[in-house]
Length: 96
Length: 135
View (cartoon, rainbow over the protein chains, first blue to last red):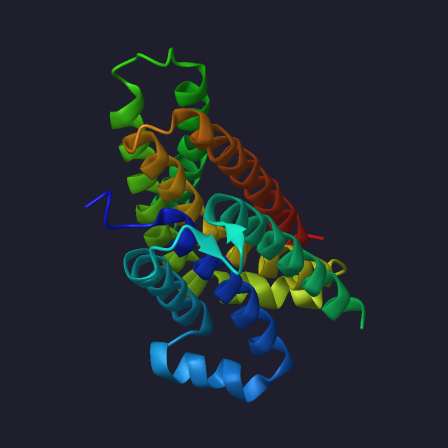
């Protein structure tokens, strides 16, 4: 089980997807409404899609590099980047 | 029901700070590291349940109060950030626990530290949001 799952690739995919879903949902209201219509609430939609990306990409994509970057490093920067982008986006979105 | 969910939410959130600290200060050969890692990752997933109940059922009324009050940014910036940062807690905790189980203890350390910092920041944001409801 452990050898079949690349946790770093899963973490990279999940964190990048979360940032994309957050920004896309806020900038394009119909997309947020679509997520809500399918999953009852946009937050539930993001939770399900992010966790699905974590599990599926972790099992399916087992390469040790992502776009030429070592998986562990890519996962670390993806997660930190996602956290920073989400916070900065909501600050800018509030004042814009 | 609301209070029960709130207590579960807070206790589970605090455990995502306390357990990783215990894991980090354990001796590398400690037999506690693996079960504690598994427990922490499990809690990070289970935490989504009280979080969802609070956010979807009880928070909308608070949100209305905050947005009508003098701290509307408490929702627009901090709650929005908090509710989405929280979705990465299981990802981070599972990554850390997975590294422990695959024998990469040193690699897991920075992920446990990130989990501690993130859980603490989310707690602080929760406090700001609560204060926004009475401002």
